[in-house]
Image 1 (cartoon, helix red, strand yellow):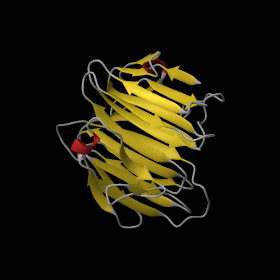
Image 2: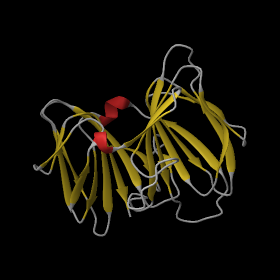
Image 3: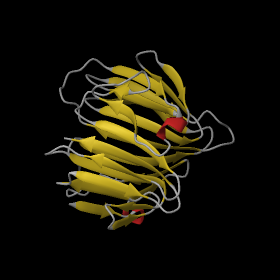
Length: 234
């Protein structure tokens, strides 16, 4: 089954310095029917204004993945990590038994737009950890590029403590890709930019998503070109 979630149906939270679109229940948005998709608990599409951001705040028992689409995001945490994240990089933080961190926009002129996802870990009481990897955007051209996995294939793949994988792909106009899915798995699909046709039948546009179950093969086609994210989940 392929269930489409239009971008315009996401909950919008606007605080001036921060504008967020929530795909799942989060903060002031609560819908008991939209709490999670398998171990996927959060997908927030955040835009933070220049010179502002999230001050120090705690997390616990969550795998947190951030992907910057535009601008820069400055990360600092209680374990001593201080990093700046840009497009072409993925950040993974395992909150485990507890960690405190901040996320700030270091620019005084440019906003930062990023996707942040939270996943439940396979096991609890993990030691907090942090990782930032770089990937070559050319390697996702007309193919699925693995950027997060429980079993990293290279130093361009971040390790996550859950039986899942995250792929990114940029398809040129008229191109297609196919993902073969294993039994008893699910797919979360998100259109970052462009237009998409799934399995020849489901049309998605910018920021639309799909929650997919009981599908053995997923074909992604595009007329005008697209930038997409595919998450394979238990």
